[in-house]
Length: 272
Image 1 (cartoon, rainbow, N blue to C red):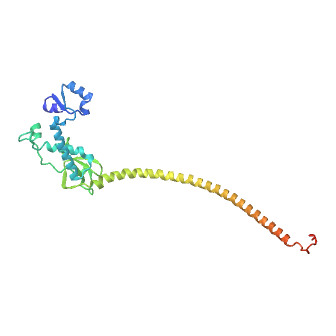
Image 2 (spheres, rainbow, N blue to C red; image 1 turned 90 degrees about the vertical axis):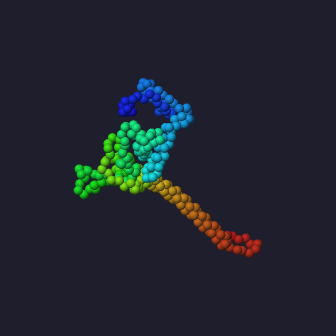
Image 3 (tube, rainbow, N blue to C red; image 1 turned 135 degrees about the vertical axis):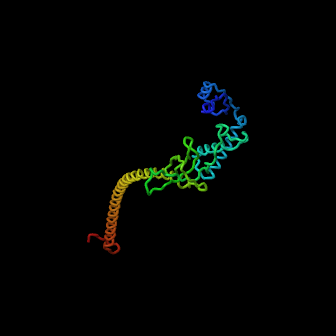
């Protein structure tokens, strides 16, 4: 794309030793295109200092933008694109009296359309997309400029989709409540959806388990009841035997007490 825009050819490419730059496919592509390769020494980023310093500048901007509007981290690629979009239209010490965009394209850029990244945006709804009583706009979050159209790129946090529009009214001092309306709602939908399915399965399993456990408990109670009956029967037999022995002992004692008493030296006949 660069070669077609400038009608010039890339002659030399200097990179670090990242895996994406040292792969056999990329080396083969550079050889076919006649591009000379230059690689920095391992663990010496200062040899590619210009690119490394620019990366640090951009990442500082990204952290500031994310923190300033409380934007979730998954949107960081959009923030990086916006940071480069702004830097290319700002003055720099490397160029005199022109911006990088002007040096590249030859036209002076306009910054009148700049808005605060992550602010609230009210997007107009066309007449053909609404009825008389519907709202004429809906709330979105600014994510920068569109690369394909002359319009703003916005994110609809309620429908979770990207919107491109030029009919937008901004509230730059306000921001979307991401903690409640985005992260928690999405997580709640996912978690509760899983929990409902799990709970239904769990209820069925609990019912089945309850039936099985109930049957098992009935069996155990039945076995215990039989054992108790046997034990009760044995106890009753022991009680009856003990009572019978006590009665026999009482009868023996009674027989001894009723024996006749004779005089000393006389023989007593127990039958008389």
